[in-house]
Image (cartoon, one colour):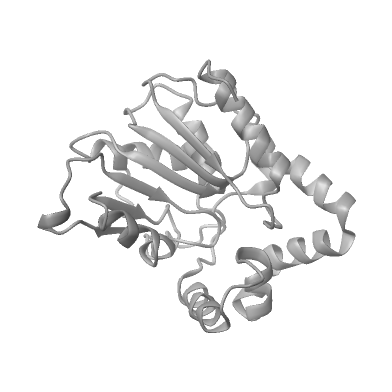
Length: 249
């Protein structure tokens, strides 16, 4: 509504793969953009009959940035932007979101907004935020905690492919593929942070995460080797969603 343009990448199925399934909307996490879904996820779902759209959140990747911006937005302002995107679909989409993008999706789905066909939260920060995650990582390994903090504050992953691997990818990712993603991060990572994590607590915890306002099905996934969003965080989110939806965990 304020005229700021968001980057959008569409990958659609060819005629022989059209299925009438709901469209899929992809929402990225910190320092990423629409490009990260366009590499693997969008072609995968398009081949299976899904219309797919990924967006770059405000001031991220190819989206518009205002001069002098210190931060791209808040959980609420990003959720408001997503609502405008959801309203542009002819039918309610399934939203797939990652990391802090998942936290934005959780806020979106907890409020009466434009309906969704479903939500998939992949290695997403839980409704309580990332404070408990940081405490667990520090308790487990001070070195890992320091490396993660240093990596995100200084954006060391833009200079070091090894830091890119440590923060974002599996240890066994092929080196050539790692270098491809490292270059994509270098080319697309915004100088403007997605969120001001120092003030994030003012919007947390999300009051009633994923109340099933729209009979919206939810999927929660994560990885045991993820050094940023750990297994307890994934379990916390799954537990909250199962209670909100009246379903077994």
